[in-house]
Image (cartoon, rainbow, N blue to C red; front, side):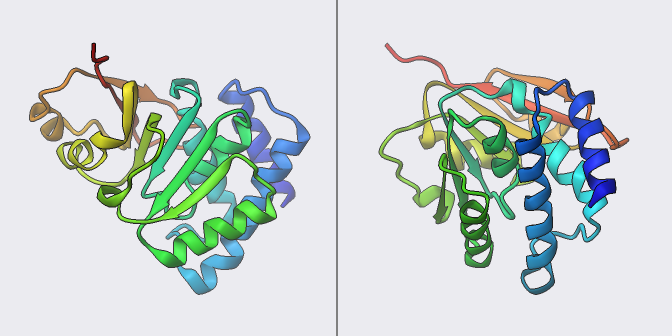
Length: 208
């Protein structure tokens, strides 16, 4: 794991994130857990822990400056991405990780226990059936659906002036043409990844 640690520390520095040994250790333990469970659960197509550093961990943390506290939902979290890396860095925010795949939510629950994360809960549910008692300040979707579907499925989860953040690869021109809402496209640079990455940001208008 030494090579992973080095790559991770360099990447965190490139993202200009405040870090310490306990956070780095937690992220490395998370990579180990994904690798271990991947064999049986097929959590992610990425098999190499070194590749996971860039494609999963740094990719997740690249959106950190754009989150709005204090309540954050990660929809279609899969193996806990981007939710768990973000929760490690934002202990004062509360994260709800949602997925309809029970194998994946079982893994995420185990990861939360092993990493002793007190600020994360897992919900095994389809997103449209989710009825949170308190609405979210930020809803994140990573590789989840087209923009129109994302809006339709997650709109009911956002608090007034909450943010919807959709993580995308290349800018999805066609999906954006059909959007009636105001949005902005934020280019992301992820250390060690040459492919294009961007964040589509929509703000829910304040009522009243």
